[in-house]
Image (cartoon, rainbow over all chains, first blue to last red):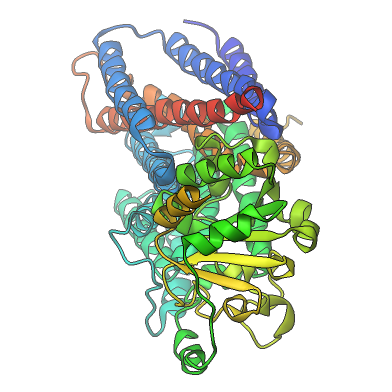
Length: 465
Length: 102
């Protein structure tokens, strides 16, 4: 058994190690060391908790068993999961953090003596407020992440689910959560605690169902943030520095990521959260689409164009992830490089289904990270490049965002793909992208459409090179 | 007059938000996915609360309702801790290989 002061110092150390873990991610070289700091911080926190309780009886064995079960499941998932499934995995993990926060809050509510918070029915007011906020945010994180997971996994349709009065209903539920917390704190009633949890689970579902698939980067970041705030809430209840520091770090991290994602789409956070984007526009744009001529080609044409180019820029998008085309793409690029063609990759901030999704997939396919560029770094290079190879991206290349103030995506930063001498656009059909609008790029003089599955087309091009 | 310890915790919390703000802005965009998985792992430090709850069962019986929730929370958090750190490790290893390759 170690003293409370000593364990508090160790919790502080593990909090500092977590800060260093995030700091390490500022560059790929330092990132692995950062992850090591994170692991160290976690080991310290867990060890100190055991030592401070000093109870090594049968309960201790049970704790270890549950720890081991969870650990094995986690390790198994971590090794088996394909990189393309990373968004689902992260959403799934968020739901677990949320649920763990809820369970800890329940345990503390039922047995406050164990946490020095008072006795059942007579919990310290401050602790009860912190606990109910932590539980409520945790519950929202859990159910919201489950929906995000189902949508990303394709079990649930990615299209927005909207109904009349949705926003007023959500607003009403949110207000009722505050009222419930107030009543709970004044009456200490356990019934109210359960109702609070139920209502929080419900609002988590309702908040995420109207948000469509391509807005998932914002949703995942937002839930990431929530999981942090839930942890911080519990940290206040437990008076634990490590948990408070971590909660604040994770909370602000998720918030910043959501902000970056929203900016990448030129939409306000509220516009994304209120949902329904892309659900209504489809019908209007479908009409004037048919008449415009499109040039389409095959793998042979594409190979010919690229062989005669001196520089190629690749624009990957979610479609590449769906088709699992990243390895085939890298092989194509290898062949191009053998012919002394300069190749770089251009990544839009919201390409894919979560922040940095494309970067991870390219990394998996062994693409060196110094060939991969962000939008601002590479956008001026399109004018000097010979070929742009768009694979699985759509809305993020649409020049309409710069020219047509009527368009729903007007003002969104886009890749200046149309400035290239020629554009190769791999796509299954001419159907509009997520925003539900036609891409002007399809009909440009210098665009050649390659109608095929992304992976198959890339392989065919490699054969023809 | 003494200052309520809550104020100290609040100070830590607020300052940590600022640290988080500046640290996360310096994360390179290409590592945003590992950032999410590692924040996932570290937020599971909530396991300390779960352990306290799990060990709180009285000497007679290990399992009461409260400690049962504690045990479940331990497993959930452990999935996240192991899964989160290992998958981050796996991703970061991919970023590492390259510079030497090429």
